[in-house]
Image (cartoon, rainbow, N blue to C red):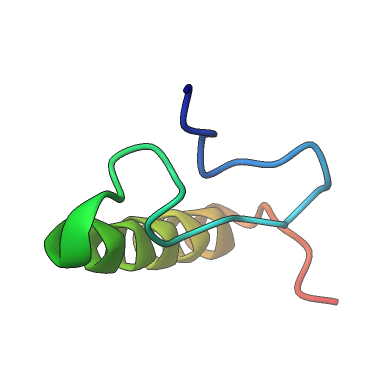
Length: 52
């Protein structure tokens, strides 16, 4: 089974948790949330990403 990446084909939709690549176990699942938050913050700082 291949885990999906955090990025989804729908703009500004991200997946986090135990079913995402790197998310197995409690620590891994929590880390995907952290990585997602960092990715969103980076997009907002660069002016990319729509907040609507």
